[in-house]
Image (tube, rainbow, N blue to C red; front, side, top):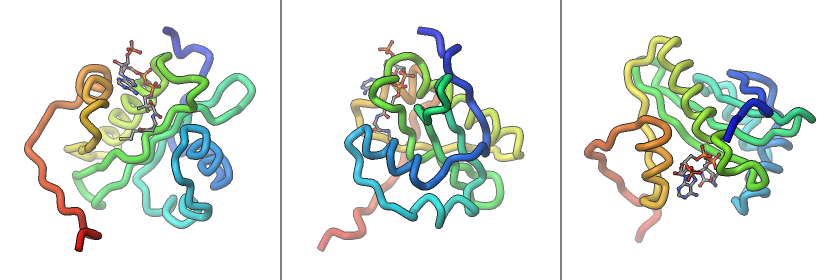
Length: 136
Ligand SMILES: CC(C)(COP(=O)(O)OP(=O)(O)OC[C@H]1O[C@@H](n2cnc3c(N)ncnc32)[C@H](O)[C@@H]1OP(=O)(O)O)[C@@H](O)C(=O)NCCC(=O)NCCS
């Protein structure tokens, strides 16, 4: 489906309250104040807004200050999912990280999102490691 009805923006305005609302919309556990605290540390973020200005898609790009970018917090409002918005938002983030001089972009995800990240968004699988730090 077309994403013509949404406007994408890189580092465009996105308030903490809007991120809380979008997180709640998809059943996530929002942390009010989180976005205001970390925004300045991001390489950037992509917003997708509907005609009415409603925030319908978002992704944040963290980085190491050099060549490595990390995609995190991809979200599409449930009312707007499966229209290609998530893919468009992620692909824009990839383009912007490349334009900013990054060489690599990483993402991790649950197995059910393999088709989204690998087939739609163009990531390739790689070896990775993980420690759950709060395990006893
Ligand atoms: C994951 C998410 C961002 C996808 O957004 P979206 O705008 O619906 O994605 P797209 O429309 O671009 O999807 C493109 C393709 O990816 C795959 N896909 C998307 N969402 C999927 C899901 N929930 N389960 C399995 N495959 C999915 C499908 O192949 C889809 O193509 P199709 O609609 O023709 O079948 C959205 O479901 C979401 O916000 N989920 C809740 C938050 C979350 O889990 N974020 C990911 C953190 S790693």
